[in-house]
Amino acid sequence: MGMSIETKNRRFAKLSRREKRVAVAKDVLKQLDAGSLKASKGVYLALGRRGNVPLPQTAKELQAHLLRRPCEACAIGAAFASTVRLGNHLTAGAHFPDKDDLDNAGVFTNRQLDAMEMAYEQTTALSGNWMRADSDRIAALYPRSMPRKARLRAIFQNIVRNNGEFRP
Image (cartoon, rainbow, N blue to C red; front, side):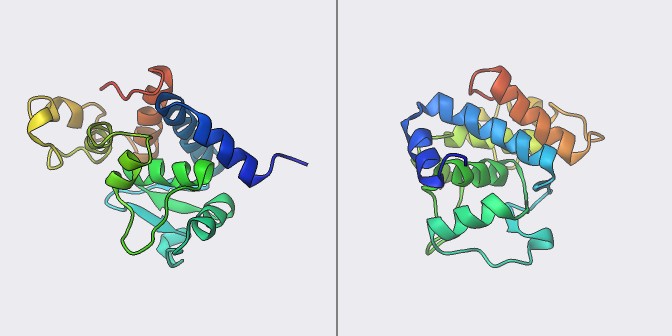
């Protein structure tokens, strides 16, 4: 029998922030390969096919769902889903989870998430003053003709290849 969910959660919690990002990126790639994750434009996180499952309210329920059912997501949503799958320390709770939850969980920073999302959604609308100069370059990183799944894969491969950093 394999390792328990609780043991996996504890192991993930002990990883450094950089190691967590690599683990999350590898999990996103694994979910894409398995067909458990569908890359969707403009969808943060939808549980089930076409978002037909309500968002669970507890970390345990959300992790259990993501460990056994498919979801659709953008770049930030994919990072969120895999962080929950691996670590079980993020919940939907009273608000819909967002990039601040991932930043506060010690995985990706808001800057990294903004850059990943700009490259995935191919928009500069997310850019703050800190990256305005790079926003056009980041948004054009992958051609518009590139399928969403391939774009999402390229972003998370970039993170693995660069030891936990998304380097556009």
